Length: 318
Image: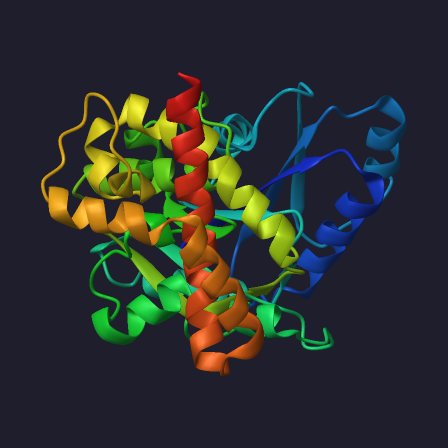
């Protein structure tokens, strides 16, 4: 078959070690009969680091795009896509390690013309010793994996499950939806924003492809909970400011907020009780002492609790 041409867009700070690592990792990508390029968007690049990066040679076409230090990931990606030559855009976060067949697994999905975008999978590297928390992160209990078991791949995942760290999209669709909203600078909110924009075009589905694998060191539980709270406090309000209809889709649906109607007040009242401190203490105990299946469910609850807590904090602040 004639494979579509592909542009990999990587947004990164200008840490020389991290940049060299991810660019060297791209050398592992199998690309027989494929044409691809790498667009590396570098935040706050210095002349010394730029000279060092350009001194390396790579087996693929590469272009460096320099942006200001305060540029967020969404804005950086938009600039990267503007420099891309090819019809499929593959976004990779600079913290990921790729599997050799990653490009093929993404591109195979585009044989179906109804596919607008493809979301790949992220696992822990095999050498990492897995605590209960990390086993949960690699388990079938997590978000999209759990959803895919019952829903298949012919419909888009729920917006809150979309992760664009390993994510490809047809360039024409990306340009038609005007890419990332540059005013949204929380990573999880950026994921939802882009997924919502693509879905709103009604020109194809976001396909979940579990075989398009990358690897990453997951954040510890404490940091993951802090990031969820930050998403609720900063990401959700910005999303609702731009897309009020998402109130009933995100964690905001569990919180009474001015200007938003509640379709099921009894359900929301129960959820307000459910997301309270006593329930959180029970969840923490179960994730430590309960069987693994129960503990995994408690991890999901604890993360959701933090996003609800963050959103409540944003309402109280305003």
